Image (cartoon, rainbow, N blue to C red; front, side, top):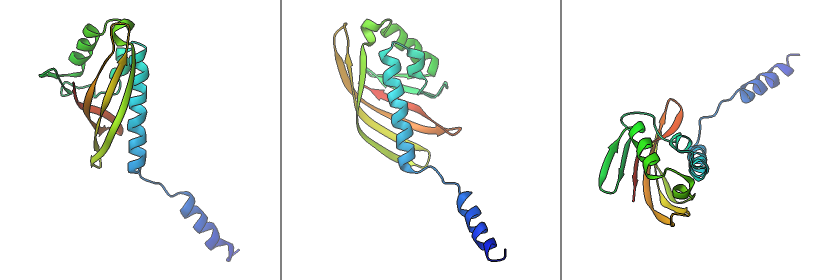
Amino acid sequence: MKKALPIVLLFLVFSCKTTKPTAMDDVAEIRNILNQQQEAWSNNDMEGFMGGYWQSDKLTYYSGGKITKGWHTTLANYKRKYPSKKETGKLNFEIADITKINKDAYWVMGSYFLTRDAGNANGTFMIIFKRINGKWKIIGDSSC
């Protein structure tokens, strides 16, 4: 029994080891959010699309030379500009880079492509993800 005790203790130590999320885990979570947003947008589900954003009055969105503040304001603008599937169409992101700023923040740069009945559209974006209460949320978006 004395010989088995060290082996049992080693097993317990290694089996109870917890690991912190790695940068690869963070990037995978961020990509998952972007995939969910593509799907929601393509289904004309603006609330689902906005699920990736920080639901705060401090959310910042910059596009067309104008800064918009707030989650609700941003959602209202999306709903006004994209009222139906004809305007939203199908969204595809092409991610150019995901770079860690610090342990709780990343910036993402890429392009978006809308294939839609109202005419195709595309552009570029830079978004800032921040880990808030253990979840990744977009806190800033600059799209053109």
